[in-house]
Image (cartoon, rainbow, N blue to C red; front, top):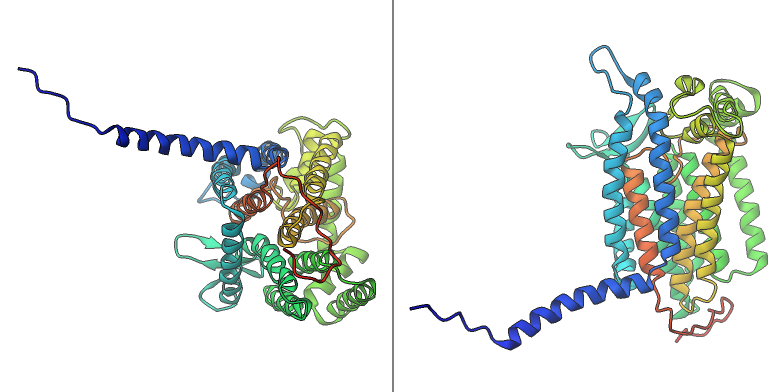
Amino acid sequence: MASNPPFVPRSGLASAGQRRRSKWQEVAIWWREIDRVTLVLVLALMALGAAAVAAASPASARKLSTAQVKLEDLHFFWLQLRVQFAGILVMLGASFMSKEWARRVGIVLGAAMLVGLVLVLVPGIGHSVKGARRWVNLGVGSLQPSEFLKPAYAILMAWILSWKLRDPQIPVIPITAGLMLLVSALLMAEPDFGSTVLFVGVWFVLVTLSGMDMKKISVLIGAGVAGIVATYFLYDNARHRIDNFLGGGTAYDQVDLAHKTLTAGGWTGNGLWLGMRKLSLPEAHTDYIFSVIGEEFGLLFCLLIVILYLTLVVRVLLRLIDEEDLFTLLAGAGLAVQIGGQAFINVLVNLGLFPSKGMTLPLISYGGSSTLALCFGIGLMLAITRRNPFLRREPFNLFRSETHK
């Protein structure tokens, strides 16, 4: 005699179906609210970055090989593919957060990475490479706190500056200035002058967008110029880099070599793995990958990358024009400016228009901490700038002082 099938309540089946539908609904809502153009631009840059690392990997692998350990030519390319895959998963996962959770995660991450910057300077914990102490030794690997601080910094600054909507009497600009000076001091102690310039630049853009009047902006510009002059006289590392850049020397030789490598391929390039100047280029897969791109893929390919960066930054800023929330406006703009600013500095170094600086090309250069941190930051930016396209918005007035409703 056949046994009767177990009884399953219809409500249980309904609830399971509702759960399945709700997950698909969440994905549909995410796809509707996410900035798909920005996502495509990021993925395009990452794809071009994979090709660029494949071109640069042989030069760096041969330079870093020893008699005991020989790295295969595509060593860094295969590593980069794995990092990129993990980065895309991190980016998509972060983009599913609500704006509130993205803000909270950014604030907590910022606080944790500030502690990390302090730990970098502790003997036995901080890890030094080529005279720069920028990594924390985790036993199984190393972590560069300054890279993960970059996206968190923009969010943290935007959050503090948005306090003025609750109480205009809160001294948000002095508070953020103090935080910026603390970060700058920790970075200069590593030393990392280039990242310091980037962090200061992001802070300046955010306080300007928050509604600061032109007189104060002029004072800040004057203070920035004075700070650079003081750094030249008080900070040996910066002075040596600037002197070598202007008068020739080791650092200038690197920049000059990068410029010659960049232009060696002409407009269309010599072809993949056919470049020869890259073999003598230092850090071909990281700091000077833009020059490798010029030699093997041509200046037109370099122009395409620059256009993609400009399009990415402009796209985010245009999306924020009619934003009604001050925090969203500042956080989104800060993250976009940070990516564009880092790319701008790297390209100028490769063009020979800026002193040598150990700063990677975002989404293009090989990197572990830098790639994962950048992808996570872009995911937070996508989460913060998510919005219902069917809701009509009024632009936020930066110069009003009353509490924003």
